[in-house]
Amino acid sequence: MSRARLLEGGPLAEEIRRAVAEDVASFMARRGRPPALRVVIVGRDAPSAVYLERILRGCAKVGIDAGFVELEGEATEASVVAAVRELNEDPAVDGVIVQMPLPPAIRLRAIVDAIDPAKDIDGIHPLNAGLLRLGYDGFLPATAHAAIEILRRSGIEIEGRDAVVIGRSAVVGMPAAFLLVQEDATVTVCHSRTRDLAAHVARADIVVVAAGHPGLVTGAMLKPGAVVVDVGINVVDGHIVGDVDFATAVEVASAITPVPGGVGPLTNAILLTHLIRAAERQAPTDPLATPARPVLSGGDR
Ligand code: NAP
Image (cartoon, rainbow, N blue to C red; front, top):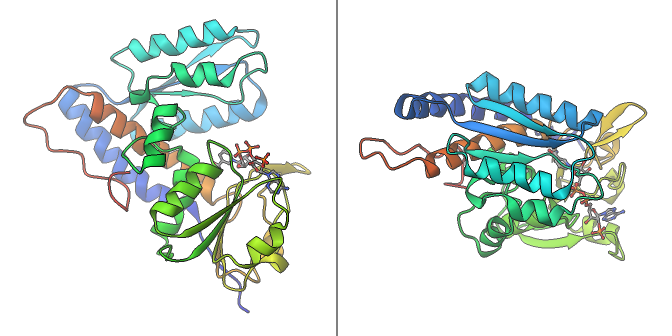
């Protein structure tokens, strides 16, 4: 069998970024300021600093006003909640992200609940999670959104196909599964207690892997011609790798996302489209404004 087609996120992200830059210019012309994003960061470990840097750079490229609010590593839950509430109340801030992971003493739930759902551009507030569950229009978690958007934009047929999602987290696995159901796939969600992962994967036309476990899916497990979306990000011997054993999977799959260079770059671009939406939705109605066109395929998601 020939090697799989590579589903690269970079070119798709570039396409999205160009559209976002136009939307930023249009927002700026109507509102007199660019859309604004603030990232709350508690302490600074190396990965989160890299991630933050990437977000800030991506925003700067398209003219978004991005900045961060940094709290010391010893910050209390109350101080993080207070920082989030302050951003919620600031009319000049359109979107808020809280950088994960948080220190163990801070309850994730307390912080997630504090974010204004209208500014929750990474879709982590329970209201947005509920809207997704019901198929209503809310903010999607950007990574799950990117995992499905890479399929849509690459022209991969989803409707009627058997999909397996490995991972059931609230931010990646479950929202990816709900999105696949919305796209009319038949979906199985696997997790660490799944008895025979290989048997499920062997039946799947589409495999989305979000487990944080390098080498979890190998070529030998895949149905020939399957489409593989690898969401995993792991550091092995100083290199970033996904959850899929790429060398063997690429020989069996018909299409596969590389790591790095697949879902990751698209996630960052998609986050920007969520910010534009948040900014447009919160802006007071301007009777002369033309509505922002949807930036993503598949409608106003
Ligand atoms: P998480 O909260 O740790 O969840 C991992 C999920 O995988 C859990 O549901 C877990 O099952 C399941 N799992 C773990 N080992 C497994 C195994 N051996 N077999 C089957 N299922 C297994 O992680 P996450 O936040 O969802 O992130 C998942 C991966 O995506 C990580 O590698 C992360 O770095 C990456 N990620 C990528 C991006 C991006 O932009 N590309 C963004 C965010 C995260 P249980 O529920 O039973 O524990």
